[in-house]
Amino acid sequence: MNIGSFLDPRFLIETFGYLGIFLIVFAESGLLVGFFLPGDSLLFTSGILASRGFLKLPLLLFLTVSGAIIGDSVGYAFGKKVGPKIFSRDNSLLFHKDHLVKAEQFYEKYGAKTIILSRFMPFIRTFAPIVAGVGKMPYKTFISYNFLGGILWGLGLPLSGYFLGKAVPNIDKFLLPIIALIIFLSVMPPLIHFYQENRSVIKKFVKDRVFGSWRP
Image 1 (cartoon, rainbow, N blue to C red):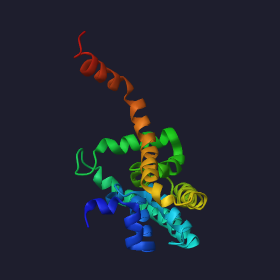
Image 2 (image 1 turned 90 degrees about the horizontal axis):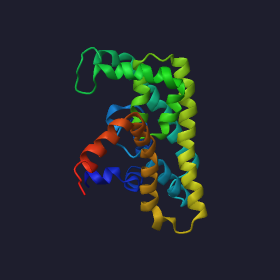
Image 3 (image 1 turned 60 degrees about the vertical axis):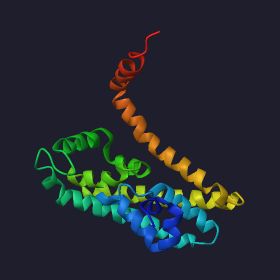
Image 4 (image 1 turned 30 degrees about the horizontal axis):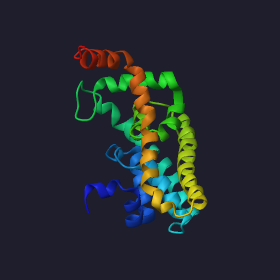
């Protein structure tokens, strides 16, 4: 067993079962150590396996939704109680003080819908509830968006995998390409956002380093 095995959704599901699915969804939703876990591909793959009778769909959906909601709630509580202490110094092992300022500006710009949108963005969904707690988003606002986001994500991906598994014969043969596509699509929003925020810098870098070094 190696580290790569723990990033393989099918291995995780077949090895750790329902408890593993719940714990991974919980950790990726609100624990700092869970940002690298394969949440999207795990949920989609679990839905495919449910279509093959390996998992019971109602229990699976209950665990994915509850894990997502509880995980975000824990992340919010962590951010509210511990976050300000982390940002009390200019530099720390995990964050910089300006992260808190940027988080406050982000929520001022996009509002509480960030909690829903971040569900479908790897890495960001882990830190969004923590930053919400640090930024002192009202808990009543947070929990309502948390429930909605958790339901959309926790139901949407497993059900998509389930119905695809029912519709496509021998889908197991295409599982790896499907997982790769899910990972690609899930990382596109943050990459696009990064490009839009740093467009001028990227264009200048390409112009200076790539085209600038080439002379006809």
